[in-house]
Length: 230
Ligand SMILES: Nc1ncnc2c1ncn2[C@@H]1O[C@H](COP(=O)(O)OP(=O)(O)O)[C@@H](O)[C@H]1O
Ligand SMILES: Nc1ccn([C@@H]2O[C@H](COP(=O)(O)OP(=O)(O)O)[C@@H](O)[C@H]2O)c(=O)n1
Image (tube, rainbow, N blue to C red; front, side):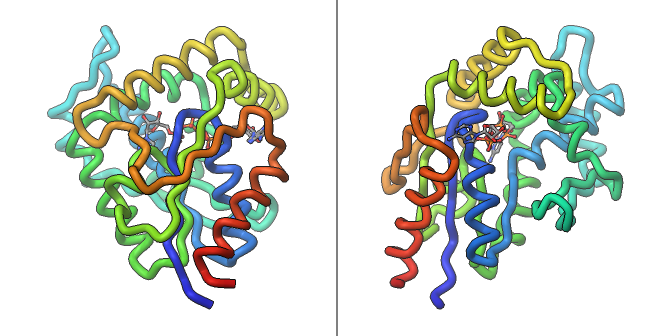
């Protein structure tokens, strides 16, 4: 069967990783959650005092410490999905807090951070048979991807989904704080200078505001089958 590269980009919390993980599992492809990588760098910066009191980043210090940041993924047999490790420590849950979400877009706007993450992403996907989700996969990381999807949903729907998820995991959650974070990140991610969030011209747009997880998964699989010629 022909192996392809699948890029899933879009706004925060709209279901990209849900779609991407399930698809990768069905196809036996590698899944890479690039948002987790920017979240892990953010967690590192928080743990090492690399934010100033006003919330800005100590950019020079972070740059000096970039070589000490090692992000890896290990498949979790229980969840059937990869877990994120920062310097060999499991951080899958720590990187999903609202505190990390409130700082991540600043870290992700720094050019040397993006350069390092994109290089690692390109290495992970060099042999194709990969599903990668993020903000710039179809535009920057794999502009030649055979299938590009751009996912959207209303900010309220997205915040509600994130709220439900955090509650289910027993993590603290306030709907208004989450909505504010989702809207702020949408703005920062689409207005940064380097690799802003954009729909690639050849990406297929999906508004899943009124779709179930199963419906969006079927929609995606249909597209994949067209591309791999099944
Ligand atoms: N179509 C959908 N309907 C309802 N909930 C969804 C749908 N797609 C995803 N979700 C849920 O929304 C939350 C955010 O999805 P996620 O895949 O993490 O988004 P993203 O990767 O875009 O940030 C998760 O809890 C997920 O289970
Ligand atoms: N390819 C990517 C992926 C994420 N990011 C950044 O990382 C943040 C977290 O990404 P994420 O995919 O985990 O976010 P959610 O959509 O899951 O909330 C985003 O808000 C972006 O600032 C990025 O800049 N480029």
